[in-house]
Structures are given as structure tokens and as C-alpha cells.
Length: 247
Image (cartoon, rainbow, N blue to C red; front, side, top):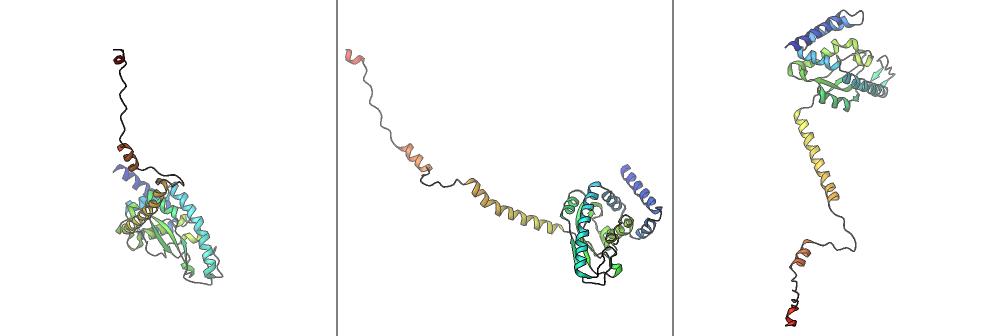
């Protein structure tokens, strides 16, 4: 209980500090976030994750990689595209794939569950292209209350907008509901992988443990050993006693 109170106090202090931030957009973002407040446990867990050094390193890696993919995609599906400004004359409904396997592994192993988020980063400029990216849902946020009506994403969009400095990462307001893998999918994938491993291991085991055939050499079997053991052996004649001749 004491630890929980400490965490809640730290979160409140953090939020109050953000609301008094000078002209950084923090005040506006926090007033907007108040309308999308998640549960306290979820807010604490999300903030702990966002400020975790391992998560921040992987998120930076994913963002750098994703930026290249989004810019390249925008250049092919939009006319007169200016990625730095988030503008274009016309775009098709294309999607940049930024699903990051390493972030997925990190999230599932240490924070919660990795889901797929589809959003339109430049929708306010009438750009219809979208990006699919990995979004880590903390364990304490993975419930019906915090995920209902995309509440977690709306809170993340408004509360932490001031920290996202790159234009293509600022807007998370035009986002589809999170697509999270269910346990059924996980079980099916696990079973398929297990079957593949078994199928591959059978010929490998035969190759490793079966002795290779050698030309010109007859292998001696168990039956040959049994026949050899059953062959009768003639007894030797008894040696006459030397004392008999002396008599």
C-alpha cells in the first residue's frame, strides 16, 4: 500500500509539473488528456514503461527505422509529397508497415502485450495514408475499461504529445482500435511451430543416429552372435597321469 501511494504521488507530481511547463504545449495537452483519463494503475504503468531505459532505446530504434519506411511510402503513394511538412496534393489509401519484431519481443517479455496500431499521422492535412506500428500495452492497461473506445491511445495522444517532437509522430488522434493478438492465435501459432519442429527433427535424428553403410563390409548382427555361442565345443582328451607308467 505504501509503495502504491508513493507511485501515485509521483504520477500526480509529474502531471502537475507538466501542466506548468512553459509554452511547450504541455498545458494544452494535459487539459485535453483529462477527458481521456484511464485507471490510475494504467497511468502509472504506462508512465513507468515510457520512461524505462530499455523501452526508450528500443522505441528510438523503431522510430528511426519506421521514419524511413513512412517517408518512402509517402513518396510512392502521394503526389508532390513533402514529408517534413506532412503535406501532399493527393494520396492513395496506402499503409506503411512499421511492425517491429524486436519491440514486440521486448514488450511481451517485460511490459505487457504487443498490439498493432493503425493511425493516420497527417490526417489533419487531408493525407489519407496510414502507418501500422507496434504499440506496447502495459499489463495494467490490458483490460476492457482502459481499452474501451481506444481510451488508452487517446490518453497517450494527449498526455504525452509534448514529448513527441517529430511531426509524423505527434498526432495519434486519428487511430483505429488496437489490434491485439488473442490467446487463441498464440496457441495456434505455438502448435504450428511445434509441429514444424517435430517434422524437421525426424529426418535430422535419422541422419545423426543411423550408422552409414560401408561398401565391402558385412555388418555382424545379433543372430550371428547367437549362432556363434550355440556352436558345440569338443572337449580335449585327458592327459595321462605320469605316475601310471612308473608302476
